[in-house]
Length: 254
Image (cartoon, rainbow, N blue to C red; front, side, top):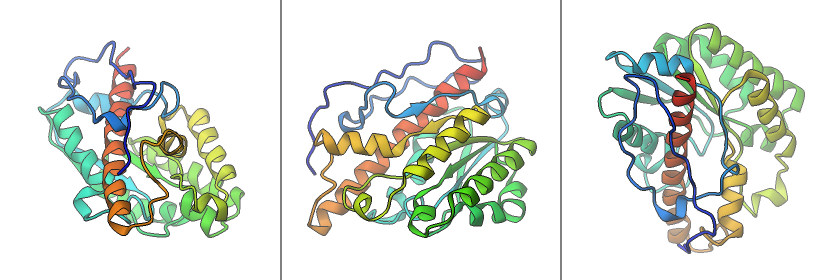
């Protein structure tokens, strides 16, 4: 794995937090996870999760997504970002019992995710649902209008049932980007985040930054190097998702 210290360091500190939802003093993130301010996130409040963190009741987080959320390319399931997200959330909020349920499937499109909400997601009564979407839709040439409709329908349905929603857009790969154009899908995710005031992890821009600054070698030829990179990137994604959650909880308490 090719890693070097990036020029700018991620400065994501909480100014305030609501009572009962103050995160533990965070452990320093791995150096390679650093990303300049404004590249990784669009911040927005997470009021439902913040209210839940004020209680001692268990918290459920659901991750819906496609191949990367299911752990494709990593060394094992425990290295995938939803598993690492759960582990790092436990460290950030040690007084709370937080369970992350992963319902990701390789090749799952936004319309397919929307069709699973009623029977598989809503019965879990999640405080937070992470929607990782766009890559499979672009690869399968789902019409952008259908993608947008399914995504917004999911957001409306989840929020109506009491869940916060956090969005993650497509991942970046220098090779895949030559074959599949995700621009319209990422724009749709970004516009939905703005319209509904949702936090967004801009995974594409983040990974592109890592690649262009030689933090991670996304052109690695050897399988062992590819897997090492995937494991490290998934852990960094988890680090940044926890920061985004902390920001959302803090913003909800203001």
